[in-house]
Image 1 (tube, rainbow, N blue to C red):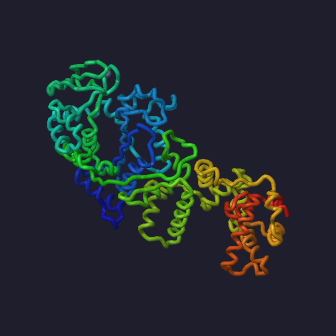
Image 2 (cartoon, rainbow, N blue to C red):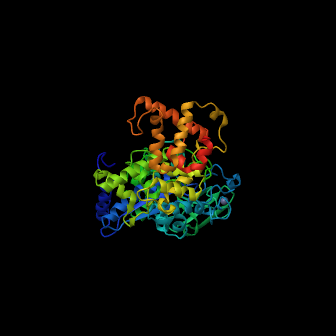
Image 3 (cartoon, helix red, strand yellow):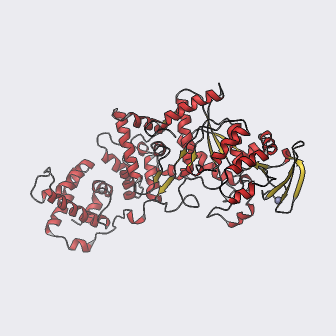
Length: 543
Ligand SMILES: [Zn+2]
């Protein structure tokens, strides 16, 4: 684990370069990620990709070639039907993920591909460059045949190593058997791996197995049998095969007896390789639920996140945390705050006032070794864009008019200047902002509320309506609405705020929100008024 106060990305990258040249001089380092496409790939899994990516990208920035492999564990058995998918898929339990049909019809060639495709698309948008390796292709093409035969011939040694780290009795029972085999065939009759190897001939490499379906196959050459090494053996085999220099893992792999601990011995003693440099990274959680989840089964996926966060910002939400720090990605009303923090960082970096560590994180978030990621040309505050969309119900002409009014110095002339952030704000309002927090402009004036107004309140409303035409800009309306409580008290419009004035202003805003949208609070008042337009304001305030 890198020291707490250093730049873990830079440190790990230089370790990776040094280690790769020591192990295999002249061969570029390999950083590895492994993902099982057994269901929706969620934002926690994205850390499995972002962590090696940041390191691989740093190596590339230092002008070294670097391979970042994404090993798809698509030859793993289909363990269970994930929540939200038809139970009819239960008949496929035990088959490789690539032999199970697409879960929602025929949109992809198989179950695994259905979940790979959206992640691949998200990685592309995030600038995460990987070399994909399908374990189905590797195993079925015979790429690992030598390793499989080696593991089978040394099954007794492997069993002994695994046994040394056993913690749970059930595993001991399974793997302590004298006839332990580290390879599990997929049955040629039913396609499932409910199989038991009963014999393996070290000389002829012929295997015999039985299956729960009743089949008994063999002896046949193992080269002709579909199947894979058990996970604890498969992983270190691949470290050696791919010469993996760096592969971090989630904290769930850190326990004694985990595949990581056992793997260290297996890769050295059996496969003649070395353990990759590694450390553990902490969990990623999410906060705030989608109103209608895009992915069955709940938690937002990287693709969902990219509908809300611009790609550099999503990168930053991962890059700014050290591996041992957990990450919480907020989809609730904290989204605007993440954008505001990012914008503040951007301004500091541009002004040259950011700390070197912040600059490094900013650079890694906004660009890769391949170049800059695209960003919104005019990054208006996310909260403003969300309010504008909310108030106008997405009317583009109105949106543009308000945005132009908000930017008198250099008026926004086209919505493209605030894209993709505007689209992110729309997606957020539609997908995550609870209905009760959405702005509902009143259709008709609130007669009851209007009937109970005091003389002073009536006077204040008249000042607002009469002053609108001459102050119809964001700045002008800001000055006017904040100034009215002063004017009605005989103060100058530019008088400094006092505690008493602040109370009066709050009451005044509550009155306006009540008359315009039927609530005590709402979007920023100048934005709301500009969005409504003068005619509608005049009608609702009935002055
Ligand atoms: Zn079978």
